[in-house]
Length: 322
Length: 209
Image (cartoon, rainbow over all chains, first blue to last red; front, top):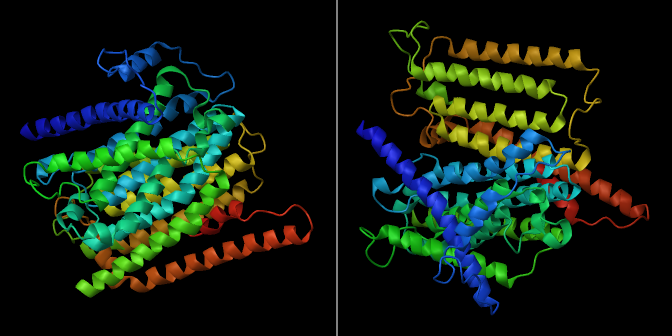
């Protein structure tokens, strides 16, 4: 009975994190973007600096009509938002935030493979949406999504493999237990490759070619309205939380910090994740969108060689120090 | 390959008449996987076939999980669901993927394909049954398919087949590059609009997957 309660509690905590953290990132994006562009951003909803803006948005989305285009493939069209969103919920289960055994939803033997595999499944949601909408812009968005995933999954995997090699394990808590501070400079190239490839997989600017609003309206999500559209947006922000958390765990040492990693380890994890999330927003405000061919070129001619070089470096250092 | 190292020969042989929960789940997931595979090859809607393939491949991953082969299960999801099916959908969207039935999605090779499929299935089942006749995986002991065990058996016992396979994949990769290069050279020499290199770039590496 106690075991069942423990499992239920863990699932509840992960679910609450899944519902709140993406909203916090979204609200931060509203405010940070606004201030970087010399605006104020949301100021009225909730009273204090518009803190309740996204809750108001959620209420608005829930009230809108749920439209399915006449020519669409109904079932696939309606299933797509769930396929896009659920993988991120599953990934959150495997990310450890503190050193104790209770600070992770579920310890997995092959955690690195689990998170990367499940994150890849999320893209199927965009593909399904793009195809089932019966809209040429949606189809173009779906095509670009697929091309982008194929290009960027390889460097992402290679960068993660480098860390797994360094730690000698593919379990996420195992990697953190093996971490030393000098891993940060050692794996820094892999970290940048992983983060950039992750941004591309999430279709965040400057890699938002699949949803380029000035060319193809909103890509695969063009025909969506109301709650289903909100679910796609939620998936994007949940993706940011997951990507930043993963980069923190794999490359920045997670709960390790200059002091206090026994009791306050989870605070270090959250702090590093928050800084990375800020970086994601900052990049969105700073860089223009990459063109499709530039996007492919960046991955195949820069990121893949860089990640291979990182793996070679990891191997050499590993052999030398062992 | 892994069970050979980790399977224990049960002395008191477990029977078929008192299945455990895991065995029932294994059977049910197997039925779902089989059904999804059947729909994949019989449906007239191309993209639906690809999506049912996701269900079939995902079902296989669950079967691996139930047999405690966690590593193999996640690799199955990563490579087949995450990459191969995405590639398939990409190809369908690039060529022709109408919503609704495709009347021309049929083939005169139906019976030949069925024969080959049945023959392949019989051969595989025969080999597996012959190899593991009375062995029984102990699901309650230490995980028989953990990353550690899999890695050890792969790089200690089965290194040669593993390396031979990687050479085969390399050959496929080089072949894909050669084919795409040749097509580019032909169009360029034909005096038509120059074909840009980047669009062929993803195709080059896809052979490796």
